[in-house]
Length: 164
Image 1 (tube, rainbow, N blue to C red):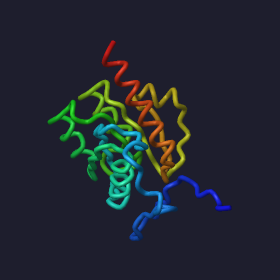
Image 2 (cartoon, rainbow, N blue to C red; image 1 turned 60 degrees about the vertical axis):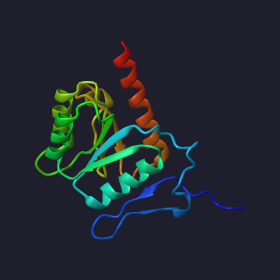
Image 3 (cartoon, rainbow, N blue to C red; image 1 turned 90 degrees about the vertical axis):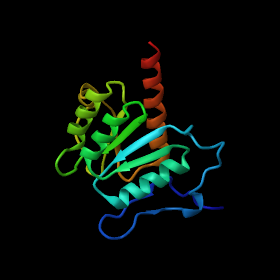
Image 4 (cartoon, rainbow, N blue to C red; image 1 turned 90 degrees about the horizontal axis):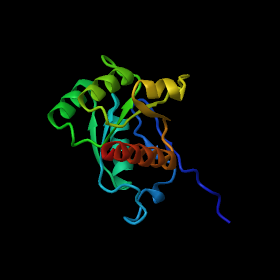
């Protein structure tokens, strides 16, 4: 009998690259992938985390774009406001934090789903986050099932708003 391996991504800060608890389960069959090619923009000041996020989202069936600089993310969205389907942004970044970035992104595209992520545990009620336009909060390291569930819910909510 084999022990269950948790579906959690391990992230190591510093110079060590992030790794997965079970590299053998990296790839999903196309029929199992939750994404349908939607474009997700990940904004984080850690290049190692951006590489890992791109890999997770790509294997999940999404098109992943990454930005290390929040201002670059704003510029990208300004140039193509309908090209990004969802944004996942780190809470703590130099210059412009995730909440400030979300506010500016939502001025460009008010229906854009924004998910906040951080390794720090924040004490902010979901009602407060939603009042800021943020759909959800995801702690690092990401649990794949939780990540994909949050993405699916946010995209479904966005589609229902667009059809109203």
